Image 1 (cartoon, rainbow, N blue to C red):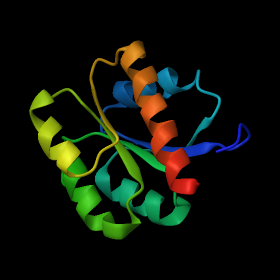
Image 2 (image 1 turned 90 degrees about the horizontal axis):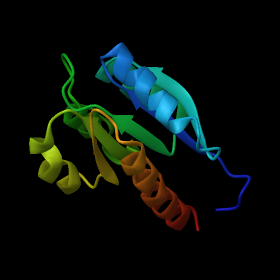
Image 3 (image 1 turned 90 degrees about the vertical axis):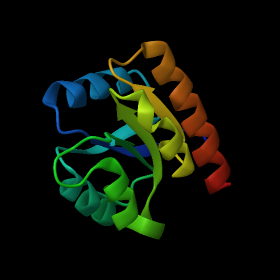
Length: 128
């Protein structure tokens, strides 16, 4: 991945302050471009299908479709995913779903940096 390549990402969370917090946490990374911010799983599926992002920051607990439902609906269309949740009990299931990382709320800037490093490696190796 060259230095001009942007990693396109979608943020999915049903809580406005969580969406804003994640957007703020990612603002310092020049190579990550937020292309859509979704409030629920249905919006997320639609946005992924329309925008084909490299990455989704996905909340797990949301009304109607949870994060795992979103991944199931996307199937082979699913981009790389980083789960962002307040609950640690879903970590094993998240990694079984091939998540790049698992961030706990409230977000720790150092953990976000480590997640971004993993994202760069995963996406860089996939596009190589």
